[in-house]
Image (cartoon, rainbow, N blue to C red; front, side, top):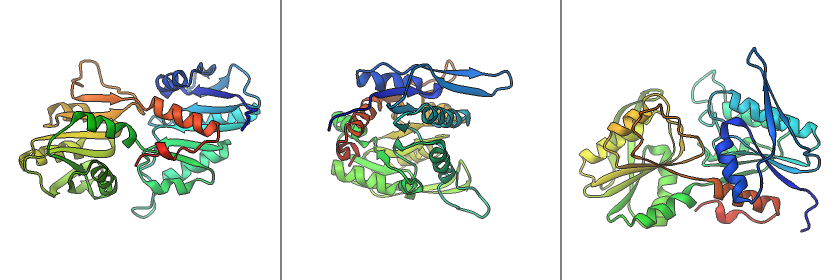
Length: 316
C-alpha cells in the first residue's frame, strides 16, 4: 500500500532515553518538541515542527510521578489540535495497570480511567508491553498492540544453556505467563504460593513443584519493592535450588528494592529498559542486567505504519 502520510517519532521527557533508541532503530531523527514550565509547577508541551497530516508516535512510559501520564495526554491533545493524521501512544510501561478491577469495595479502577483519558485526549492507538493483566486491552475502544518481552527473554535464556532449568511463577497470578515460558523451553514449572498481610508486604511463602538441584528462573511482569521475588529466591534456595534468577519486564524498583536484590540469594535479575534504572549513587546494581526493548518497538511501529501483521512479535 502506498503511503501518503509521513511518520514521526516524538518523546515525552520521562522516556527520551528509550525514544532516541527507537528512532535510531527506524533510521529516523527524534521529533522536536519542548515543554514550557511555569513557576507554579504547571507545564505545557508543544511541537517545534509541523505534524499536519503525519502519523505520529509519542513514546512515554507512565510510571510515577503522575506528570509523566499528564505530559503524554497534553502532547496527544497538542498533536490532535495540530492536525496530525494519527496519534499513537507508545507506552512501554502502562502505569496504574494494577488497578484493573474492584478487589475491595469503594476503590477506583485506575487502568480503565487511564484508558478513558487517552481516548478523551485524542489517541488513536496504544502500544505497550506486558500489561499487568491481559484484560486491560478490553478497556480500550481502539486498537491496542500488546507485545511480550518473551521475544527478548527467551533467546537470552536459551543462550545461557542452563542445565536442570525450571521456570517459576512468583505467585498464582503469574502461573499463566510462567507456564508459557516452561512450555516454550520444554522444562518443568514451579509455582510459588504467597499470602500477603497487606499491600507490598509478603507473609508466608511455599513452592509447588520439584526444586532440589534445579537452576530456577522466576518470570514476572514487574518488580516493585522486590519483596516477593527476594523472599521467593531465598525460599527456593533453602529448599535446595542450585541457583535462582529473575526475569521481569518492568523495573519499577521502589522502596528498598535495590538493597533487597543486592542482599538476596538471587544470582541475576534481568529487566528491560521500559523504565530507567534510578538507583541512588553508590547503590550495588551488579546483579541487574538490562535488555532493551527499543528494536522490538521499532519493528512494531514499522509494521503498524506499513499495515503489516505484527503477530510474530506478540511473543509466544
